[in-house]
Image (cartoon, rainbow, N blue to C red; front, side, top):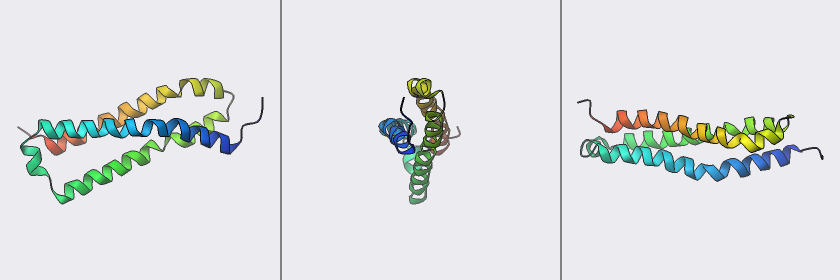
Length: 116
């Protein structure tokens, strides 16, 4: 078995995680859009430039958080559990999508639904 280089591990991590980034963003967008639509007409009245900027900041932070998987993935590839990790890291991808989806739901609820 040849020794894994940092470049190979990083490339493998990027290849795996970037394939899921579009789905990750679409799931979060679908949650926000569904709460926006469900909250009409209240949600339309809530829209402002500041709210749009807030949504932009939250979207960027969600994508920064998505990148937290890279150092973990690269580290795991250098352990004796490399093979197990590569076969099971999709579980981390699912959990890594469910957790921010839950947070997004709470933010969307507070932005686009009435207190009544």
